[in-house]
Image (cartoon, rainbow, N blue to C red; front, side, top):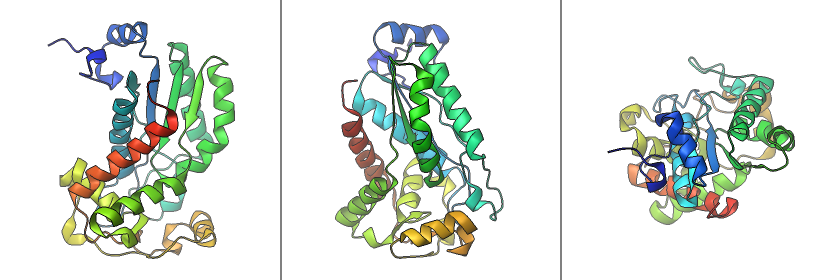
Length: 258
């Protein structure tokens, strides 16, 4: 069967041919969404692709809820300097990350996308993206809308609310390699989760001074095992609910029917 993105058959434009993307644009599919993830440690129980994998799934879920929206490739590596004491973590300098996002936006705008939506799915990307947004609007041009979901606190609220309402696990949401992220990865790629190795990390609310120390001194300064929260109770059903709930909130934030 010929892939026809406007029938909802495929939204990820890297999986389409160039003429198919051009055809979609000519039919009014002028909105695009992409995620900014990370490849970094997620404790002893979750593969390092967590944030990038979540980003791709979340971007697709948002696109489907918005309608007439394509998905650009996830920027897989992000600003993860605070995780570099853990083996395997990759990190971009803030300037490199911001330049990459700007070049993405510049490329998408040149092809005729009129609405560009950016989803950070790694905590270290929220600040640099928020700082960059005003400049991105200049990069794209005055006729292009560029928006970013830069409310990390809001993301955490969604995860905590859903985990508590559905499974009574809200107290185990901490934001990194916790019950939320473990559940999401179990739903997406169960072979990348090691349930027999899960352990609790730093639990309790992340006060501003703790977050500041984490970013200044690194994750190991606040959590020796690299975990914020507790992964016990993680399950794929919760993971699916979390992705859908966050996508629903983002679709409302961005405005449907774009």
